[in-house]
Length: 145
Image 1 (tube, one colour):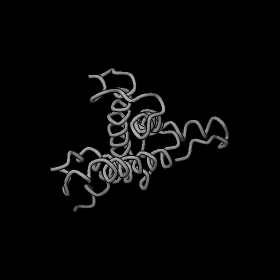
Image 2 (image 1 turned 180 degrees about the horizontal axis):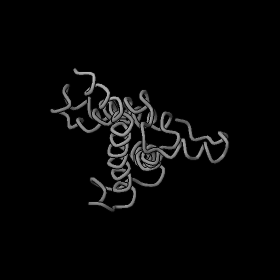
Image 3 (image 1 turned 120 degrees about the vertical axis):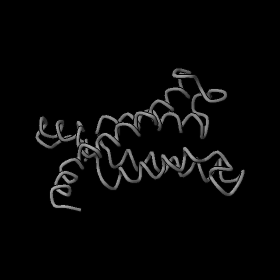
Image 4 (image 1 turned 180 degrees about the vertical axis):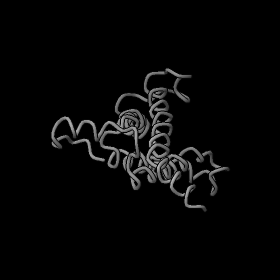
């Protein structure tokens, strides 16, 4: 790669990571909202009862942690929670039906799991509110990068 192209890629990295984080977390939060409130195409199947394990809790994690990641607040812990919940969904729900994700319907769970793990490791990128909140509060905010 030429030096000019390398420089351009490095300059774009925070913005591209921020856009990736925003798109993935928006889709995730929308899935939680659809399950909990029957919006955006409704619950996939029957909406879970309040407090029902694991469906209702999964939807709450999708909506709440997805919203935090979308906004760029507490990104690393929220993304790790999202990743772990999707690992549980895959191994606890999908894996028992067939070996491969394409056979057991677990492709979205696998993709979300790995996407959120990437976000947890790389951080929020650009376009996040965490640094803005920390700057305004003098660094005392819980909003970790």
